Image 1: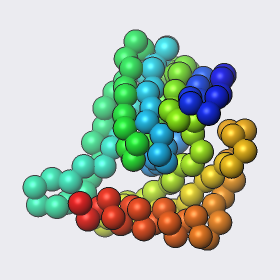
Image 2: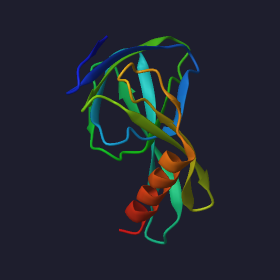
Image 3: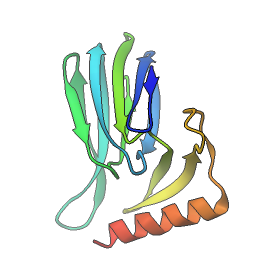
Length: 142
């Protein structure tokens, strides 16, 4: 919808079953506001024994969820009806890292990157992916 170096705004229409796999938003903070329908957010969580699981939160129309840089989640429309949401990121979104859960670890599956600010993402170079993996490992050790 709008993009400056300071922020990025996306309006997303979610068909029934629409999903964005487990991902983060690079160095950007963000907010998701559900305009109509409902979405389900799942976030990784470690229990006291160190076991990793995904905790689900239902986001109904009218709910706004804010999050910091490095927040990892997936978002799904599990209902039979279309949903509509507004996503705003600051600074403007330049990378997204996609993850999978392997045992009790989050593993980087793919890194998408944009240098030109177009919002059109491409796969990261091997060097960019390695830097991202190092960042994930450093964050996981904290």
